[in-house]
Image (cartoon, one colour):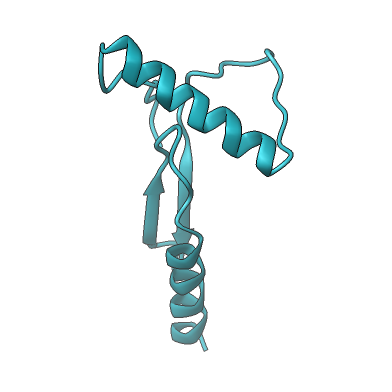
Amino acid sequence: MGSRKIGLKSWNPFKLFRGFRELSKRLKRKNISGNMKGDGIVQGGIIIFNNNGEAMYAYREETGSEVPIDDIIAAVKMVKANSV
């Protein structure tokens, strides 16, 4: 998905703190832990291809946001239905 890096959406320190706190709570609730290895500021994503190698769905990661699981499942089902 390119070499996109995390960017700040606000320079307001209160907004940044609140966003970080909400992200930390969500990670704890899901029992997810991290490490300090690798390049943690590079953003990724998900691409779903059909049988012909054509991209049918793409999701560009937005750090701090939930992954749209329902959209991804719907895209996989659509590709599967069209490949039969």
